[in-house]
Length: 400
Image 1: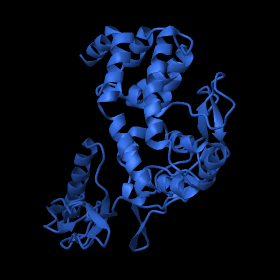
Image 2: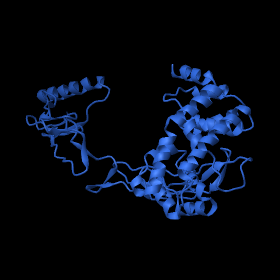
Image 3: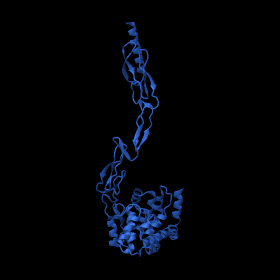
Image 4: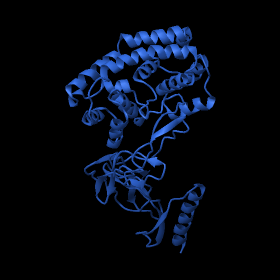
């Protein structure tokens, strides 16, 4: 009786020692081989296994799991689990095997696990956008683009994009957007003729304005330039729209384009227009005297980089534009359709081998002209003489 009481007191003292800990280890029942008493032994923590079960005289003894073995939870097993998980095709090791975890595999980026295999994320087709992007555990979830939104390409990452609001930009709609194409806008100027073949900016204007953009822009560049340009100042709301819609290197080009349109009646802009007209006559001499067909324009459409214009748009150009304006109109619509992309850069990267020989030669000469010494002299004359040293001082201020 005294011996049994001694064992009971020993177990009592053993239990009391754990009351000082915040979270006592979980217990398991084990029969003491010496006394045949059912004891409440401590389980071993993750990363270990039971080396010796507890007795009335000692606690449970735990030992670390050997290499390539693990135990993830508290347990009372006499051995650890083997790290036998092997990564399959299109999987990578997300977590190496250690004492507390088996090797963890995960599908590579762009793939997800379906049963035992990694499958590539679904691409949402044109007219559909990504509602929920795919994860290593789940496929892409697509949604049909709602009214006012579009998706022009098959993608596993792109959401539906809102149609360009031509009205907010002070532009008019040339082609209304649908579920697969954005709206195409053009400049809304009351002084434009009634011809539907008008373009919002000429090649010479675009080349000139893009030439004036410095290679390194500071955040305050646009606001300083707006205050320095001569003539009528633009509304703050207009600048906010430019800042919101365009990236840093596109903003100055858009500002200069709107500045020219707003100040057409000013003497300083009249001189600019006169000199640009001389440049535009040279452009017409390069590409305006060709006998173009719909096939020529379609081949030029496919030779241009970026998003392609629809065939009905190209056919409409042939119907409404004289031959001398067809390439210029196509390039203008291409630029707008590609988010005001750089037309001169696009002409430089044309796949000329896909074009008729004469057209390819004329476009090659045009690119050389728009990137030549004439354009640099025009920039010097217009922006350094008319706008004056203010623009150069602006660059110096914004680049320091």
